[in-house]
Length: 195
Image (cartoon, rainbow, N blue to C red; front, side):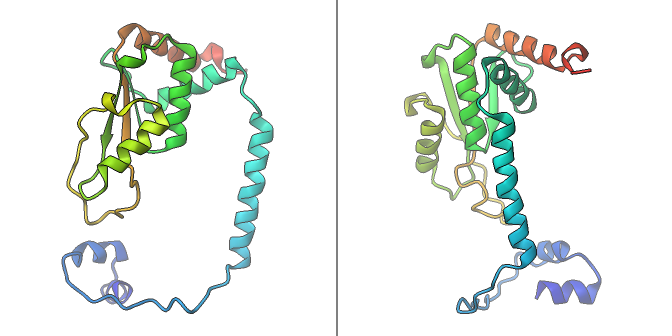
């Protein structure tokens, strides 16, 4: 096993995994009849996550327009393009993409026909399914999707990690981009930070 090789050679298991990735082998079937009960630590972790989710909802509540504007600006500051004179937001998380699209439409005059979407999706994953998925998330029609970027699949990565790929939402409007950059600079200025 990978573990035995790593132990014998006194190296990391991840190194062994890379060294032997092209070695053919016959995987042993897993015994699915053995059910594992979750440990008390795992159950405690799940309970804490649920408690913190409820706490988060209580703390955030329903966003005011001011809070929504600031939150969207912070999201774009982390995930959006800063140069190029166009609004360009990329992410794999559908909730973040949905939030960004709602924010963009709420605070800026958007010509819906000028929105463009491009999907970055590894070869071997279903591009039609990914397009349908992201069209629903972004509310941008499939006719406004650009040719997807299809890099070859990397055998060292899990194929199901991002089955819908990474999506790029683009709005080519320098004025809108400058407004967003103005909001970002204001948000990140010392005067905006609570003292």
